[in-house]
Image 1 (cartoon, helix red, strand yellow):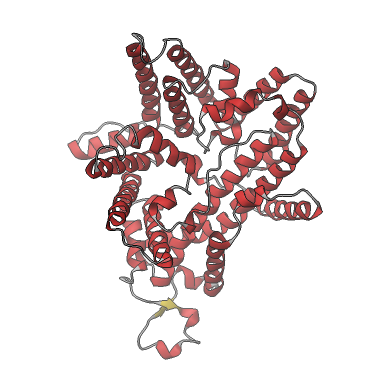
Image 2 (image 1 turned 180 degrees about the vertical axis):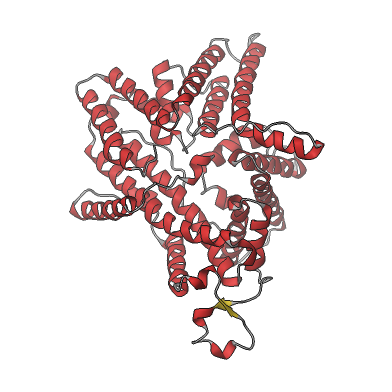
Length: 492
């Protein structure tokens, strides 16, 4: 069940919120939590009911492991080795489970290619959200070992892990961020401001997904279908379209997740903060998928040594961390290479800082954005040739060719530049598409982002009219298509 599906929008979400608030108004707080857990498991099982035992078993297992860690005494007594053993067991089981579903086929394929063997690929279907609920629970176990979580009951833990607004694509939360909200009586009453703000934020996210991201996605898909023959302008339209599609798709999901959670009076951590405004690669990762960046920093980079053991160790830790980041995003060499690129960029950034030379802010933004834009090609491409094909077009290797429809106005260039009808010229909308992409990019750079908009939100007829308008346009787009498009990050 997708956030942009009619079933979710018109039945599931309104029913889940209404029943939850009704139960709370009557003081039946235990039942209201049970209701949200049940609704979340229904939401998860709707896609494939056979994976319900997987997430249910994972929740129960990790809760018991966390309890066992907490009851083994402190890290400083004789029970410390037992605590470490239980923690290691919990982490290994979680990673083995994730590895089996996500990486088995990738491993078998590469073993066959390297050793010329013929193992049958299992074609295991990837359970929705397994990367997110696995990382969430690994963080919980590590925090339990560090004694930064407090036991508060299985029902609270089950709600924390399964809460449907953040189940499929984050944010990746820490237990201590949600546990205080689970017990606060004030958060269980009907908060009309939270409800209005949640609907407002949800409508912005829905509009981003079904209008902006879908528009850019169509152009990106067309471009990648012709990756080997893209002209200069077509290649840039293709790459920028995908960068914008990914931006609006993921920020749209984040807005909808935070908005839906706010309807239940739960505040999720901010996960997206205008990343295309970043002026260096570290700034980018402090803005893009912020909770994943935090997880990688706290549970991989710092345990590897971080910046505590000299520059060489720091650079090594950065490369390993971003290789893990790439592998987490997908079981494929393109994802690993994408992570490697960002790891190298982070190392270069720290080396540059050691020179203590300031760069012009605009130039810094140009370099950062173009690196991110080019690296996304490896994130999106189905194979190496597609990514390289788009890159060749972007640097002009395929020729500086212009759409045939421009030949009438730019005929004086016919002796120097070729005019041809590629996929972009064939649409007869070249200028229109270029202007729309430019407008979308300016919106990401200068428009008020959703976090700022929600922070300054004031319920009233203007806000209500704006929300209704966004929802109306989004609903028209939804019903104009037969099948809702998936959110990109749900695939991870």
